[in-house]
Length: 144
Image 1: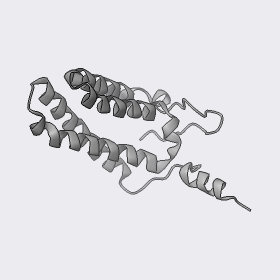
Image 2 (image 1 turned 180 degrees about the horizontal axis):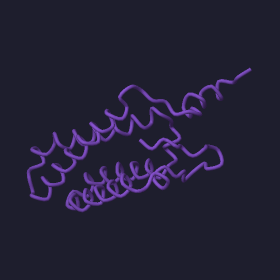
Image 3 (image 1 turned 90 degrees about the horizontal axis):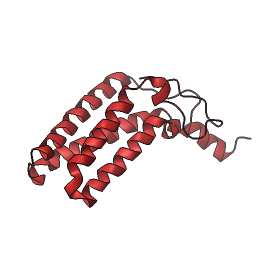
């Protein structure tokens, strides 16, 4: 008899990653919105715009980024152990640091942009490389 733990593992880490109709289009739209809002946010801080003016751009950037990550997580949670997801987690931590060391916000947001650009454009064999639990999970072959 199948245990609850094994059923949960099949749901969280399916052998074949889940998809949904128009997944590619949704990811393209979210990525475009995320890049746009993040660019406006960084540019606003570079040109010393008031935080109140930039707050909607901050929230738009955070929300589009989280939605983009949620689309990937929906497919399988195995991605949490890949280089790409680890980079996303690092970017979230760096974003939280902006509020701790406000005077370094431009530097931190620039680092976030660089990490995002590098990990988004590196070959899939590196981006989707399992960093943790390599013996437990098969390499995730989805490239979109």
